[in-house]
Amino acid sequence: MSPAASSSPPKVSVVVPVYNPGAHMDELIDSLLNQTMDPGDFEVILVDDGSTDGTGARLDRLAAEHAHFQVVHIPNSGWPSRPRNLGIERARGTYVQFADNDDWFGTEALQRLYAYAEENGSDIVVGRMAGRGRGVPRELFRRNLPDARPEKSALVDSLTPHKMFRRSFLLEHGLRFPEGRRRLEDHVFVMAAYFAARRISVLSDYVCYYHVARPDHSNAGFRTFDPAGYFGNLREALDIVDANTVPGAVRDRLHRRWLRVETVERLSGKRFLNAPEEWREDFFREARGLVAERFAPGVAAGLPARQRAAAELLVQDRIDAVRGLAAWEASVRARATVSAPSAEEITATGELLSGGSPLTFTHRPDGADTLSVPVDGIPAEVLDVTRALRTAKMDVLARRRGGAEEFFVPSKTSVTRVPDPNAPGAFRTVHTTVARIAPDTLNSGRNAGTWDLKVRISSCGWQRDAPLPLSLLISTDGAPPVLATPPARPVTVLRLKRAARRRTAALLARLRGLV
Image 1 (cartoon, helix red, strand yellow):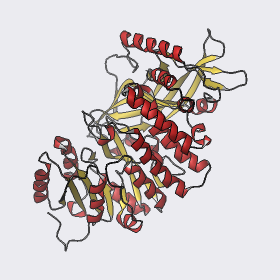
Image 2 (image 1 turned 60 degrees about the vertical axis):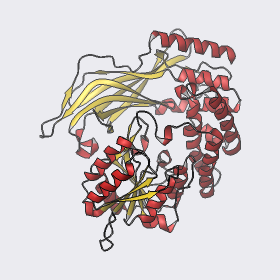
Image 3 (image 1 turned 180 degrees about the vertical axis):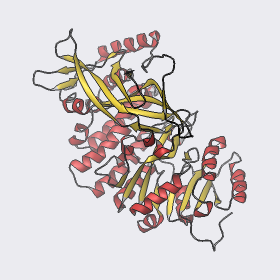
Image 4 (image 1 turned 120 degrees about the horizontal axis):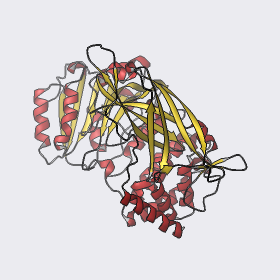
C-alpha cells in the first residue's frame, strides 16, 4: 500500500532491503512501529528482493495494516544495492535513512536524527550505533560533532550505509550504490557521499541504530569471499579517495583505514588463524599485491606498531611469520581491578596481558621504546611505540545489561611504567583511571535499568575490554542511582584453559622455528 498521492511529503523515508530474514526482522519492525516520530511524518519502504521464505506476504499484510509502510517486490538481485537504489527512487521524504532487515532503531532515533539534521543543515547525519555480536565505530561517537569532515575526524571508520541522507543531496549528485554481487559497495557509496557533502553531522549522545550479527553469522558481511574480487572492489573505494585528494598526509590517513581494517586486521589473531589454509594463502597474496600497488610508505608508517609489524611481514612475503604474530596476538587480553568505589567516583587499575603474562616493552639505549614480539626480523623502527605509550589510556564504560548501548564515563587516566627486574630495559605499563559517575551522560538521560561497568584499554593499536565487578542501578522514579557490587568474581577477561595455553605455546614454538 502506498500513501495517498495527495498527502504531504514525509520528513523521513526509511529504506530497507529485505531478503529471507525470517524472525530476524521482528525487532526492526517493532522498532519502526514504536518510533516517537509521528507515523504521518515518515514512511517505510520495504524492498523485497525476491524472498522465498514467505516474507513477501508478511510485508504485504504489514503494509495493509499501516499506511506509512509500503512494499516493493522485485526479482532477486543477489545483493542489497539494487533494493536500496529503488528505495531512493521511491522515497518522498526530506531525508532517506537506510537500514538492514536484521538491525533495528532506538525508539527516538528518527525524531532525533531529523531534528539534528535540520538544526545543523546537514546533508548526512551519522547516528550513534551499538553492536550486538559485531563491532561498531567507537572513537567517532565520543561526542556530538555538528560539522565533521572525513579528512579531520574518524568518519572514515563508519562506512556502512545506515545513516540519514538528505534526499535532494543524493539526487543532486546522482549518488547510488554499485549494483551486482560484489563487496564493499557501501564503501564506494559512503565515501562518495562524504566528499560531496556540504555538512556531515555526528549524533553521539543517543543510540540510534543497533547493528546485529545473526547467531549463525549469515549476514552478508560475515560470509566468506573471494580475495581477488574483494581487493578489486576495495580499489574502487581507494579510487574515490584519490579523485578527491592529492598525494600526501590526508590521502595517507584515509588510505590507512583500508590497510588497517580490510587488510592487516584480516591477517591478525584468530580471524586469520581460523580461516582455511588455501584462503589464507590467497588473501595474503592479494593483500601483498594491493600494498605494493596502492599504498605510499606513509600509510603503513601511521599504523600502530602491532599492525605495522604485520604490514612489514606482508612486504617481506613471510606468511609463516604472519601466522606466528597472529597466534601471539590472539592471546592479548586485558585485566582490571577496582578500588574504593563510591556513588560519585571509582578508581580502576588495569593492564594488557599476552599469554597470561603482562605485555612488555623495551626501553632502548637511544631513548626509544619498542614493543616486544615473539617474531624475529622486524626492524626496531617498525616496533617503535614511544609516542603510542604517551597517548595510551584506559576508559571506563557503562553498558546497559540486556542491551547493546554503551557509553564512555567521564574519566582521566595515568600510566605507570613498571620495570622488569629480570630483564634490563624491559618494562610493562599499568593504567590507573579515575572515573566520575555521571548517569545523565548515558543515552541522553534515557538510562533506566542496570549498567555494567568495564574498562577499555587503548594502547599501541589494541583496544581490549575487561569487566569491573560493579553495576550502576538507575530507577525510573527519580531515586538516586546506586552503585552495586555483586558477589566477588574474577575481573580479568583472560580465562584460557590449560590445554589452550599448551596449544598456543606449542604453536608459537613451532612458528619461531620456521621464522
